[in-house]
Image (cartoon, rainbow, N blue to C red; front, side, top):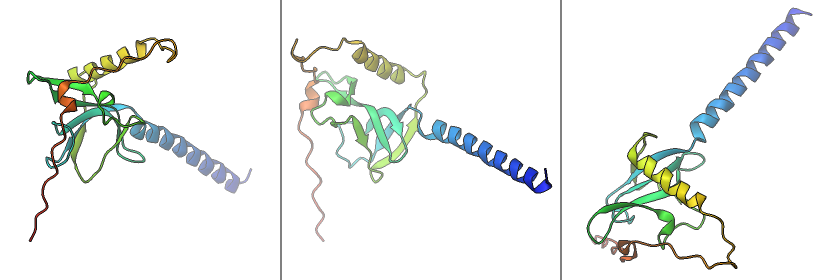
Length: 160
């Protein structure tokens, strides 16, 4: 074998190795389901809270899946409620976040109480037996009273 053939073989091996390591990094950095909290600007029309929790995805667009919101019940206690039971829940279960109103987001510790509560809520839903729609009508989920409250009116435009 000539020296040129050896150099080509080494270069091809290095390129393949770097490609494999890059693919592993790409998968671990962008496609891992990690729970996060997202904070919105105070003038956004989210729920009564300006926080959302869920599995955050950054590629190809900032999104939340398995989203939860904090709402207050009629006694004033805060509850963590899955967004999918709200009347305005997204059809595909994905909340597409608008970067203009997201002030910041942060990963949550997987051992935190709020992550454990979200996981247990999601696992309870997945452990329920699948029922045929013809066999039994599905019960409507219990929506807290404050979820049905009207949205606040948008701010009035400033006329100069």
